Length: 163
Image (cartoon, rainbow, N blue to C red):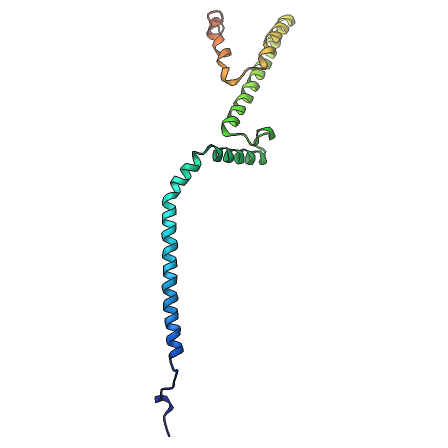
């Protein structure tokens, strides 16, 4: 009886050798692709700060981002509809202007009610009211020194000195 285990048959191991060769070549290609990808990524990451700087310094990009930001604030109810789409500078200006006008009106109301509480004659209260009302509109936050500096004038300094 002949031992079949010792016989070499035509084609034995060829498929395994071919699979090994294909695997080795695919492995080399995959390693090469991974290296190329990361080399490309490394180069782009190096350029990324400059790209960001270019976009940051681009007024159109800045305007788009500011518009998106203010629209986001509006969607959360943090700013009025009319403010949606405004730049940060305009949003801040409008908030300051609103606060300034609200402060003027609050001061107006406090002054008139304090006079009434202290028993000042109605005619004087009405005269003060009529003198103050025109100042409630048409004044900007940037020009607030116009009112603040009044108390520094020689004519009115006594108001802050009196106890």
